[in-house]
Image (cartoon, rainbow, N blue to C red):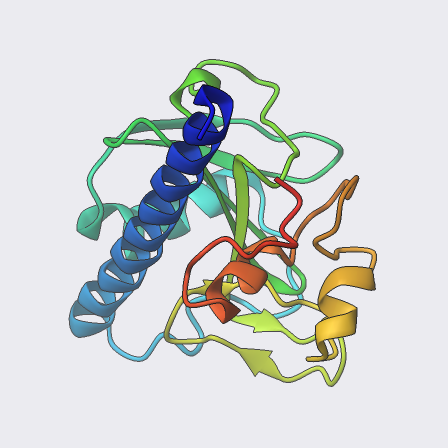
Length: 194
């Protein structure tokens, strides 16, 4: 194997490990919060765009007491409110709550911690959701757990790639890439747009 091939293989394995660790940590955080705060149904007010302060208050109540982090700051952009949380592993998690529920994005590269321009590429950006209303049938999903982002996904493999949020080479949203990895037993599949 050549050095670039070995470096790419190592980067993919590192990303897989970090992604599984983040997913596990977030669900453990939620389980601990549920144990103290009760049923999560109703934690997020339906059909409401949270302000930055409301999002921070949600995090201080339901997430921060159960998750180690190094602090948070406002990283809102393109009209959407986002709270950036610096994680102890060097990554960043961003949280937003809008009329469709909670959005969480995990950035696994520490070089973006102090940079307001977070990457929008499938190699460093992984989307999750909590209490998200389905864009297809308006049913609230993932009330008591965090899951890969599947908002408006029709549950077909073709739509996982060809949707406007699909995971394909040149994608700009790449929102479904985390689901693609989860469906492949948390391993980056050969058709992943690395």
